[in-house]
Length: 457
Image 1 (cartoon, rainbow, N blue to C red):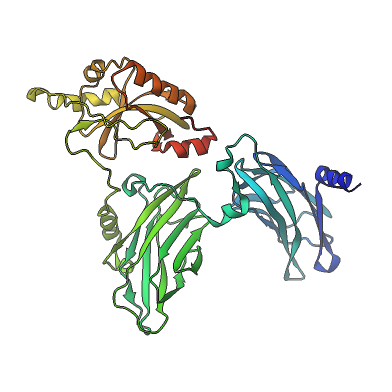
Image 2: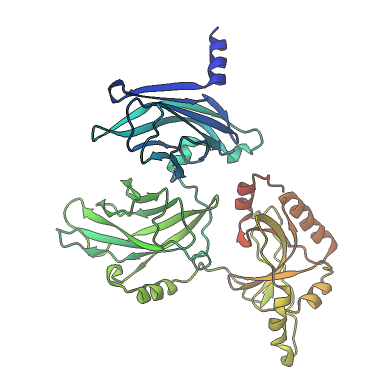
């Protein structure tokens, strides 16, 4: 009988009811108690509003990894932004009962349980009234199609932004600058200001700084971020970045014993989300007054920060792609190609002809096989014919290199197999798979996560 009862609950969903406004308003919400990762489920809200007819709002906050869209309207303005479901009425319709339905999608990489509640706010007798709907627990059944190592508990996902390898700040145009800490004028406290140039970062982002022992920190200006100080770490966490292209946050360093230091050493990183991939840049300290810089000075300051340095060869101006072992499932063979001597009167010619071979961006995530890289342009057709490469070779300028690649594959396994074919049929035995998202280079690991594909050795 108990098992039958559970089955019935799973089929018809959980009904949550709260009596609001002294019994004048009744809101009922239905949602299933168990859902599958990667699936969608509907939430139905029924509002019995009695005599309430003015401004009103229903709001529900969803955990990260869930998204929502409207299915059936109740003449309210539905939005889903910053993980918040909102239905707003400037004036409630005359009907005594209102019903609306929205659909929630669960990311395929999630598991665990979360609570689903809601708040209905309204105006009655010129008084704002608010009441919470009792939360219900919903369990997520993990997907069998996803590699278990990529599945994360939904509650753990709320607390961290997974860190991946740092990328060039210059390429992403995302930079974070720390002003050298200055006295606040109160005791021995120090003021720390950080300038964020957010570039293509829009949604979830985090500043994390290590604070020396003997100090504690408190927020001064968080710019709508969640600020925490724990275990000698300062954190600013945004669910959605401020709208301004650049902004300043600040916090105060307070010496615990009252005796501060004139100079403190801080280190930190700025993490942000692009699509479903996390990027990380170092926070650079500069001896400037961020609060008194004009726009031109800020532009100059940002331009003065170089991108991440890429290790370059010392013995040849043109070499293999210098991959690290295991970075893409290939092999690590330190092969170097000989420099192709060029006649002096043709030195400028390859640069002019490179436009014929430039790589055009494609939509979505795709893979190519990189066969070489060098700091100077070469005669592509002549060079690769010497290495038995008969496929169309395209080039791109990336982080100071001319990188040469062939093929285009939506599936990683196809690109992997083509890479092996290049090893076996040409003189190039260190070719490897490169990944792109809308024409921008990303790591193979990021591409596999975005497309939910499996890595093959």
